[in-house]
Length: 136
Image 1 (cartoon, helix red, strand yellow):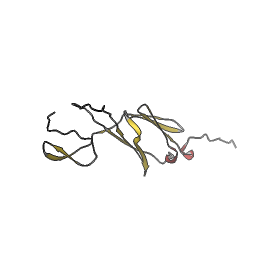
Image 2 (image 1 turned 120 degrees about the vertical axis):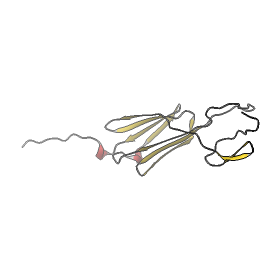
Image 3 (image 1 turned 90 degrees about the vertical axis):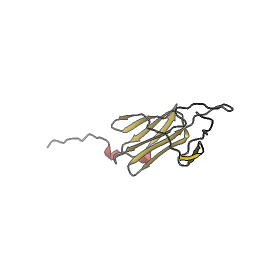
Image 4 (image 1 turned 45 degrees about the vertical axis):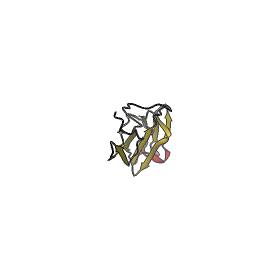
């Protein structure tokens, strides 16, 4: 890293000064790994979001689409000059399509130890049910 290179925090949009020139900064976007388990009552989704806090996490549902976005906070100690960083404050983003069988108004979300757990319940009408057969 040269002395002419300025280290700046990431911004979604904006210009960055490097060696006296202005360039557009690009956000590093990572796709978090996700495990999905489905049963007759709900779908449970676990997403790995290391370093993402509740206030930097956004979960949206709109028009049958579930969007998860979060930015990791990578703290650096005061009075320490960072000389090398492989990934600095990564931005996580993932999008899923949700069918009408699920009740998006009742989604439960829990974030613990960098793992987001979402439980998306099925609508009662979409849950399997047993139909009694009458004879005669």
